[in-house]
Length: 91
Image 1 (tube, rainbow, N blue to C red):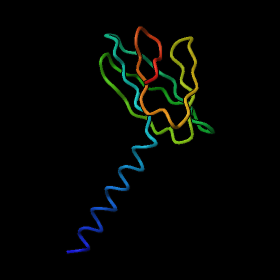
Image 2 (image 1 turned 45 degrees about the vertical axis):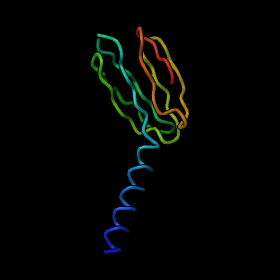
Image 3 (image 1 turned 90 degrees about the horizontal axis):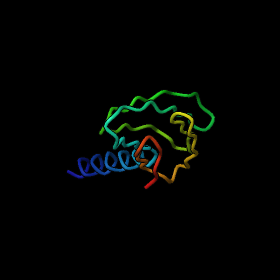
Image 4 (image 1 turned 180 degrees about the horizontal axis):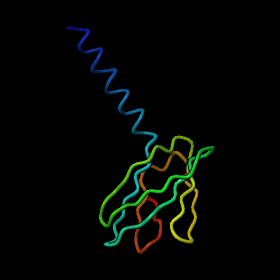
């Protein structure tokens, strides 16, 4: 019986730790946007976020985000970024 509780507690801890490092990009515009995400010390990835949808990206040590000509740096403390009017808006 206690083993089940221990396993459940371990799974709950694992999900909270991994979600704490995730950056959520929310596109509140009607149109799709392509966001270039470069994690610190990593390779650049292209995320296409459809209108009124969101995407998650693991950004444990911070990321550089580019949307068109706009560029922004976000640290690991920021967990959610909105796109409004084709620009980044932090929480």
